[in-house]
Amino acid sequence: MDDIDETGRGMPYDHPVIATLAGLAVLVIGALLVPRFLPRQSLGLLFGGGVALALMLWAIGFALTTRYSTIAWKSGSLALLGLGGIGAAMIAHAQYETLSRADASSFAEVEFGPGGAALVPAGAAARGPLSRLFVESVTADTQAQRDFGTAFGRLGVANLTSPYLLGQDPRVLSQCAAIADLQTLARSQAAARDQRAKAVAQALFAANLPAKAKEGIAVMAGPAASAGDPLLTNQLAMVGATSDLCELLAKRGWFNNGGYFGFRSGTDEARFRALSKRRMELAGETARIERATQERMAAGREAVRDVLSRSIFLPG
Image 1 (cartoon, rainbow, N blue to C red):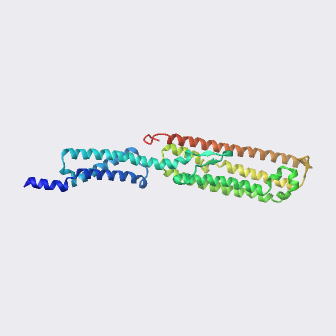
Image 2: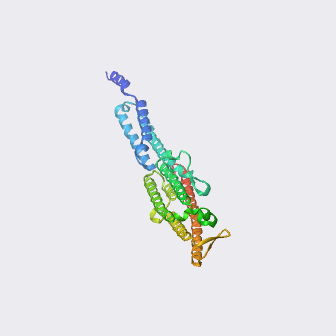
Image 3: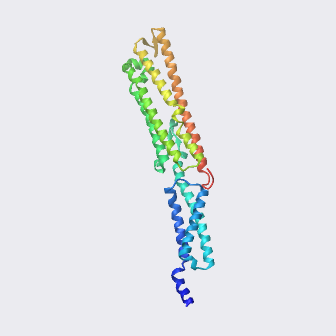
């Protein structure tokens, strides 16, 4: 009678293969889903969690069916699920790395166009939240500089450098107040830059990236507003010097002296020379700021590239 019971019971209850495969499937599914719902976890913690989950699944399978199997199946199932837990941890880690590295790759692939303008790779905005904010920031910064230059050009500021052009089209001399008002545009653009930088900093703080990659991205994003804004300082000074030059020339104390500005007043001439020199210095400073920005971004890019070139199973 006992033999009949054992035989009859063995068929419906003894399914160690199914229990083991089901446990492995749960481990794989968990490894794929965890990175999408939980913040980044260390590889050691993932290993511990994977093995713990594997033991729990083995215990469930043991209670349901494996306990009716042979010792070989009991121990084999435990070993297979243990290895599955380790494998699941590695899969989850790879998932974390894949998602975060795709986001960081936008920074590693930045190139520079004429004048040092940053060029982001195609489709970068879709690679992750950091990439999206970076693309928005670079695009907005480029457009802001273009708008600032256009505003200067629209007022005819270029004519202030040539007595011939100014004689042909003196309308800029009635726009001195409008030139001074460009300081408002410069300040509003700087405020928008600061807001974009803060958004990148917040996203970077929450990003699932190695510390060194974050450092490189932070360098590319630029210093905090508290560290000063050399571009704003330069723009304000250029607007001020240009406005002062406009007001000086609007006095009409000048004449065309063979293609150069001549003045009837020595004081006006000295003031003109000082303002012209100041504007040339500021133009040179603008170029230096642009070069420094490119060099800073290039240095940050190399740091990000270095991190992304390493194995995902090495510390960042």
